[in-house]
Length: 525
Image: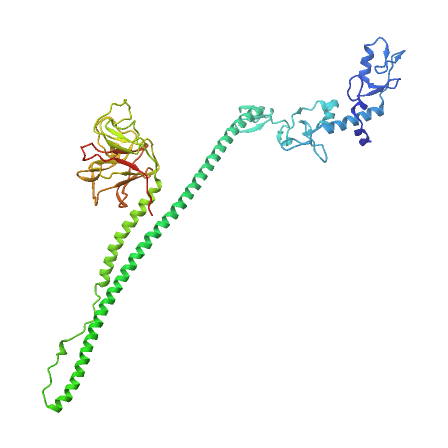
């Protein structure tokens, strides 16, 4: 029966007046079906009693009885249509507690029955008088957990003192003096708070992901640095092993030569002795025959062969080795250090807005010298006006390295300075005032401090390398051509961006006309 009903259309069970599925259907004498309420109301408005479908007129007003069979069929059809139209329960939705098999989505929950109903199973609550008095609410999951165990009422309030859900009766007893708010209000507040916390947690997650990325990048860079360090160390130790092997070979050769000299001396003496023995034997025979006195022979009583002395040989060899290793280590380590810092090369150019009016800069910003005559330039707060100084355009932090050619220049300063140095007045160019510079003048090479640090100058400098480690507070200077370390200022405190600083020296006829040139780094093996 049910399968047959589902194959019929809605028109087969629809009232032609209300166009809805029959409710208490009745049949007129002409055989047409209507809802009892619909046909009764229709005849109330008519003078003549007729059928709304075929217009057949009845002499008297009819009192049709409910068609029981049609009423049952219409009810079953209505049920099948509702089941089709009702959605099945999905995740995060409340299921009907009455449905067996596939559960449908609940549309209401009953606070008396403590059960959630789909549209079909809710029908008795909409029809039966006793059930109509039950309180229906929007579908709620785990309804029994939302009811007060003590008063069997819905927990629709929130006690802010004890941070628990309560029912209205609880506020008149155990929570009488406690501030309470509607649960919905508290829920919305908590939801907003949780939303903010979720956003903060999400941001924390993103921050930590970035930190992981940063740490991985550091590890990757550390691996590369370690590989490079091992490679440099291999070269250093290979060279040192070469020194040791050379000293060992020299020591062995010295010992062998001493031994060889002693052996040769002994062999020569033995030959001489053997020759004398032979001569003496021959003379002995001749003497007895001729009775002549024998020829005088060498006195061998004072002749000795002394074994070579090796006392002090090993110590002298080790002293030479130590001296050799010291020189080789210093050379190798300084070369390795220079190659390491050259990895941090930065491309810098001089900033004409900072240059003193006497200075002439190249178009590419890589060269500068004192022209001897001041130019008329616009006033600029960044420009040096007291000294013929110039800075680079770029600020730098972290680790960075650059090289400046100083060949044939008889007076120069170079290094780094902090951004806030005084550019207009006379000042001490020391680290305390924001200057970390190396200078060359008639007094030689020195690091500008108070007092200045005078440095040995083994040969005329051709090119100076400058390395800065901002975080470690270090500024180092290198003789690039000799590949040796010149000086390092350590323990520096940097709190501002740093700039490359150049002072080509005052123009003094032809004595100081050479350029200071920012040159590219030529990394050698």
